Image (tube, rainbow, N blue to C red):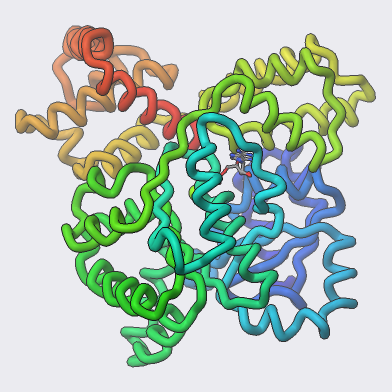
Length: 439
Ligand code: ADP
Ligand code: MG
């Protein structure tokens, strides 16, 4: 068994037999394409490809990490693609050699991005940057909630420049950190610097995770300064405005604000509808307008959900040979909504709140009366009550409280706040969305 097969075998133990035979069994590991930090699996059709990408790539990466110590980027590609790829390989080689650090998704283009009021500003800014990199807005800082298209837009800039033969690096903070510690350990910081400071375009995703990582911030600051002085373009994303990222050095905040800060808001209904239409076109799924409108109204703010929903609808309709009518869609999605909730556990909520509010899970569960901790604990209880099937006595036990009255007291407090404080309401909405999309 090769490593890829071993990993799929391990994954089998974590999922249902149906999931395994429907999706995972259909994959082939490509030893030829895979490197230790970027592994390739080949899917027989676009559906399985996007389904596996959405549902399992994190799990697969995690299993690799357990087995090999390295958490790779997981690429799921189509069968035909790999064939044409090897034919064109010699031609592509110089470009891909040059860009071997960049892991851009080639589907993340401007053409595939749907513009609407909610993202227009960021879209136009990104488009401008791709036309005149390093010249107008440097850095470009894009921020907004989960699944609203930040990574897509930043990679669209990357794809434009990469197609022009420029060297592009796309990295997450996590990858940057891994690289940094690895080179530090191996005494090869010169190579690290070469890599990050000699590119034409640096895309760094989700910089809120730089929070409180001081030596990494220091290193990133110097990378930033050098690129900027050389007139190289930097594009950054985060889930919030630079000013609001806690635990970020002031000098970085001010650098981040210095170019252009563009936000992406949750899409309006019309934009959601247009995005669904676009995704149908890309994935060759045929849907009636009333089904499209229905999907647009049930998805919350996360565009990422759309792809999962389309794959699911399509897969089911193929399986039972039925067209996708509105009733069919309703039935399938009812299950999806329920399934989403089934995956949410109190621990998941605890960890999310801990990360978001920067308070240890053990503190949240403690009896501490300190203001921040009480605040985090109340939110965690509220979300657990709203999003998991746990009863009040069960929650009381989990959070070490006397009995269920303490829980109902907390619920009332939070509900009051939600009613009276718009900013708080939005915060809770955001956390709810994050919980459902991380489950
Ligand atoms: P973020 O980085 O903000 O969490 P992503 O860029 O990963 O979100 O987007 C999640 C998914 O939604 C991607 O598949 C992306 O292509 C899609 N998406 C988001 N916004 C749009 C849009 N306006 N048009 C087309 N696809 C979009
Ligand atoms: Mg992203």
